[in-house]
Amino acid sequence: MSEKKEQNETLAVSERFTSLVLKEFGGNIAGDLLVTDHHKALIQGYFIAIDRALAAAEENRKRKNEKNADHKFDNELPIVWANVNLTDLAIDLMHYAKLGLDMQEPNMLFAIPYKNNKRNLYDVVLMEGYNGIRLIAERYAIDKPRNVVVEVVYSTDKFRVVKKDIAHSVEGYEFEITNPFSRGEIVGGFAFLEFDDPTKNKLITMSKNDILKRKPASASPEFWGGKKTVWENGKKSEVELDGWFDEMVRKTLIREAYGKKHLPRDPRKVDDAYRHLELKELEYAKLAAAEEIKQLANTVDIDPDTGEISEPIIVDLGKAAKAAAENPDF
Image 1 (cartoon, rainbow, N blue to C red):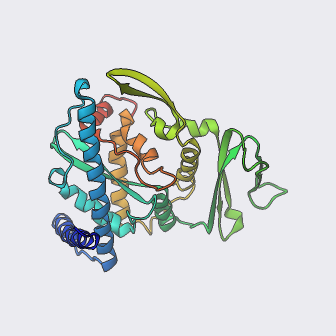
Image 2: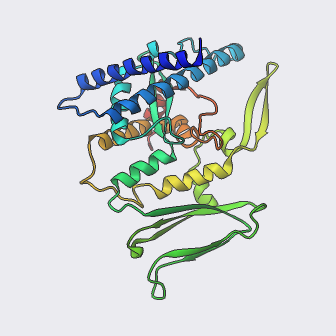
Image 3: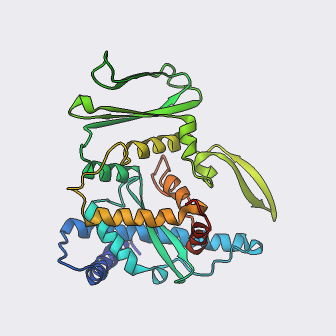
């Protein structure tokens, strides 16, 4: 099959998928539904991205089943469209389209299939990358910053905080990279929110310890670095991975900077799409006691070169939900 013919067939399927999403969404949501051509184009892009994510996850499922046959991985449910909970996915996709998140843009929105044992289906969870987090925060903030600076600070850098006080009318900082090609160890980082009214400028600082507190308990060593258990020739062993710790630190700073604590949301701007997003985040949080979803939320979009998921991970939602129910502190 020629590449052009394959692209045309993919486009045709994505158009049918878009129609199905609109039908499912319209059948589950009361009231008028105003859908623009831009929304439809985003949904077609969602199909293409999710289709790729499902295919990659299916390959990973097969590989793990074969590789771990003696270790009871044993997931026999194929990760294909026929086994996807399409009703919930359609509602989620329509809301994300209304938010304007483009799944084909780098680090904006990612699709991750999770096995739901109760339904014997895969729930496709949508997670924002840091560009998605930024877009949503700026759209719904009471005050949108005109510029945001995020920097990781290393041991050879010179960084000085300038706090707003009797001698300084605005908050600020001084930052100098003294050795750009050998900056030493990471000691922390900062984010600077700059507004049209400079008296509102805000400096957010995080030490390395502050950042590590936000590291998921089951963080992937492929991203955060550290030891990973592998099976080789039927034997378990540990390997040390460098990971992408600097990228993870930077993403943690971005998430902090664009959080509600520093950029409060404007109630007058909040709409159904944003409320749906908040409900989904609450749902994911309740399932995150075992840290699977937290791990993905902080690592899945960190491929510095491509912005793509390096290795799809399938999470058992039933296990996560049970862990959440058994965790009295959650």
